[in-house]
Amino acid sequence: MKIFDNTFAQAQTMLSLRGQRMEVLSRNIANADTPNFKAQDLDFSDVLKNAGSTTSIKATHQNHISNNAFKGSAEMVYTVPFNSSVDGNTVELSVEQAKYGKAAAQYQATLRFLEGEISGIRKALRGE
Image: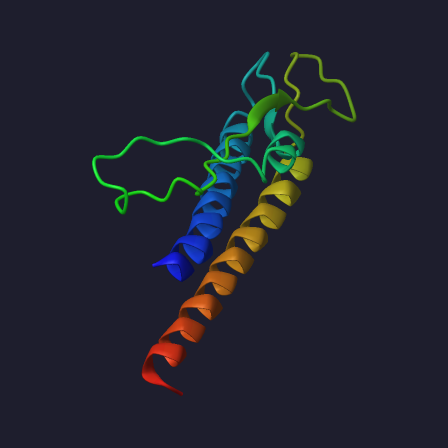
């Protein structure tokens, strides 16, 4: 159904990207004491530029996969530290923890939005 494709395609993309970002940030936090480790993050400006574009997907049947579903991907970028370190590590633990907390809150907000959409669809199907 078209209503499900539109609702879930964007939410799936956002959850995937937010999950990827949380993985990258947790990797940074885990390597805070590793010499010469370079902190990374995802570049969302590229994703936002391509948000309106569509990708072509081949399927065995026209109803299997919606071809208007945006499959986003973000590029990895190295973060520039506020302060330099002696061992060449660019991870600043407090900054990375703050970024992770914000990313986790955004992930939860996306889940709550999706939950609200599902609730609205359920009410419509029940006739409420």
